[in-house]
Each structure stands twice: as C-alpha cells, then as structure tokens.
Amino acid sequence: MKPTHADLLRYALWLGVANTARANRKYYGLPTTWAIHLALNSFILFLPELYRGAAVLFRLDARAQTKQNFISAAQGMVADAAANNPQYALYVAPVALAYIVSHPQFNIYKGSLAELRLFGFGLDALPHSATAFAFTNLMIDALDAFHAHTPADAPWATLAARADEHSYLVAGALLAGASALYEAGEYAIHKQELRETGGDASKINLVWSAQDTLFDLMSNTLGWLAATLLRKRPRRKRQAPIKRLT
Image 1 (cartoon, rainbow, N blue to C red):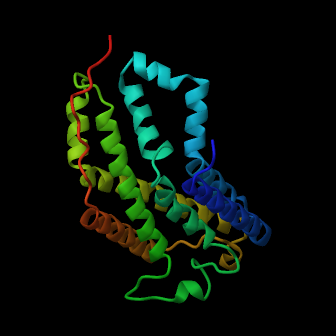
Image 2: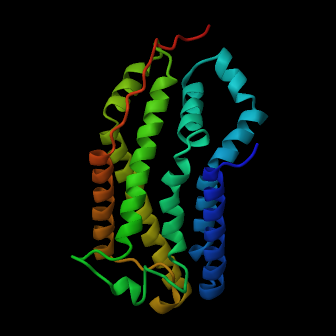
Image 3: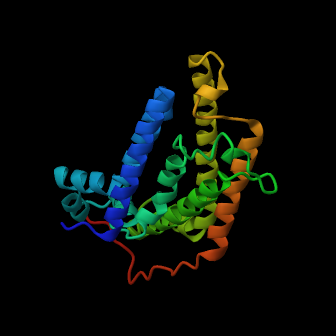
C-alpha cells in the first residue's frame, strides 16, 4: 500500500524523535532522557501499522464480522480513530514535537529558552496546550467510533452512547488522568536523573518544579478548552442500530 501524506508526516516525525533521542543520549548519557520517549513516540507514531499487522495476524476483521462484542467495538474504535483516520498524524504530531524541542541545541525546557515567560507561561506551554488540544479531538473521535461499533443490545450500549454524547467531558477526564500520570512520571524521572548525576541539575535533561507543573496543567486545560469551543463535530448518522450477530 502506497504511503499517504499523513503516513509520510508520521515517518518524518519519528525521524525527528529518533534524532533527538540520539542527541540527548550523547549529550546527557542518561537512558531516561531518550529511551522512554523514543519507545512511547514509536508506539504512538506507528500505531496504525501495528494495528494493521495485528488485524492480519489475528484475522480481526473476519472475527468482528462474525462476533460483535466489546473487543470488536474496541477494535473498530482503534481502526476508525487511528489506523484509518487521516487526522491521526496531526493528532499525534504535538507529542512528537514536544520531545523534539528537547534537543540539546534548542531545548525549550531548560536554559535560556526556558527563562522566556509571558504571564508565567514558558515556551513549553505551546506543546502542552497543542498536545491537549489534539488529545481531546482524538478522544472525541474514539468515543464516536466506539459508540458506532457497539451493538445496540450490548450491556454497555447506554454507557457508550452517553460517553459519546458528553465526549468533551469524558475527554477532559481522560486528559486529567493522563496529565497526572505524565507529571508524576516527570517527577520520578527528574529525581532519578538527579541521583545518577550526584544532584547536578546542569547535567540532567528533565527539570521539574511545582510551578512548572502548575503551568503545565493550566496549559493542558487551555488546550482542552480550545478543542471544546472550536470543534464543531458533525454527528455520525446511524441508519440503524447495530444488531448483535448470533
């Protein structure tokens, strides 16, 4: 299958991530500065290929046609929201770019660039808010797809419909959870890097502070709010409810 422009964008972003990981590994010499980010971004950027490979290997499409359940609904969600979604590359781009700008030559998270502030927000507010904006849109697509692939008589059908109807709120809750995990991970990595460098903050890649965490969360909130206000989602037209195959 010939790569689309969206595919080429994802591949280009991965090359940028890989180059940044190489530079950070060479500059800092700490696995926490590159291994985790490279692994996470690789999974996110190549999720469509991973899904297609799994679909062929495990015959997921054939199984979904003969047996519709929670697993088939989740499969349809991943297919529609990620593998077959032309917007997916744009949704995941901010995550990759947020790491790319940690390159030692133009790191916005520490040094002179990190000192630039506007109303307390640093340059890192841009990738944070952009990531939250894209994450919100991706979750809205995912909830819509999950609802569409849920059998009408499934025990979770009502829950899927309500989650889709209130997708902005659900996306906000998921974003809050993801933000909490991310900030906790940043704190843990920050402490680990300090231990490995004998407490020398100049030798670590990830600098954490309570103030930065507060502004990160505020940036995420602004990104979610922007997605909520700007996105006008066309409701999926459902000609008839999906009936469970027996």
